Figure 1 (cartoon, rainbow, N blue to C red):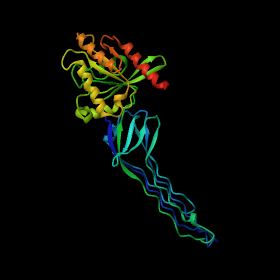
Figure 2 (figure 1 turned 180 degrees about the vertical axis):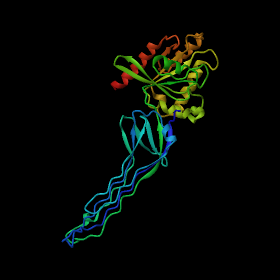
Figure 3 (figure 1 turned 135 degrees about the horizontal axis):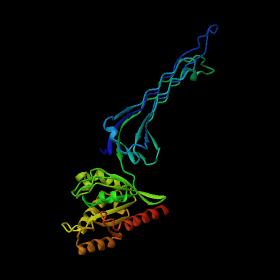
Figure 4 (figure 1 turned 30 degrees about the horizontal axis):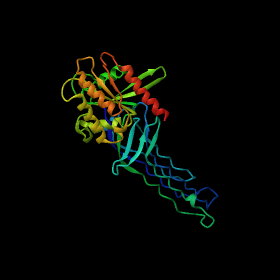
Length: 334
């Protein structure tokens, strides 16, 4: 199961209270204050985990509470700190306040941390309040309050190139041909029900990541067919490969292309402004050359390069991947 959204509750620990205490030693009848400080409460920290790929673990555990700090003790002993609760999340996780909807963190770097709930500070013991005018203070601080809130986690895959198109456009076949990824492939729509990532070894020391996004349908931007959940996974991609089946049926390749292009524009998030390569797929089976010409001319009219490929026959793939690599290099040079 691929889970890309989750809602969790986090609560830090309360700070330990300071201590009121006085030295009690033989032959020292009026010992001074020696109350120690309370320990700091534990925090709840999200960290990018190298082995975490989805948010599925939060399906089974949704509440995370850090321990409180311990109270201070006599003899100037500080209370024990509460242990931090560390929660691994996948790279690409966006963290929102579930009540306000405010983006709190975008975890995109390996090892990146975000303190979701800060532990309360430890209270000061009475030794801290000793002064020239108050040699025997009986005052101490309570520990600092804990923090708690509900968070909404959204996973947006980190990939260089995103594959988009209608269901059964050939995205999974292309991904499995040019990478070692093994998505489910069949000759019917909605075979892919979760995103897949694959790595293209372009040259010996150069590679890039491709994301296969489940097929989109009309109304995807409104969530039809879970389209809004899938579209968010291409928000971070740098180049889009828009796959269009050259099959002779209806609607025409141009109409299929325009349908998805409209969905990207309506969804927003900068998707319609990303570099696009239009890819005519399944050229190993008979197709209408006139319709393909219409598709190529429409792509060129919009300033998009066009490639005709067959993943099954492995035709046109090197040119396609070369174009994608050129876009990636151009962006790195900016």
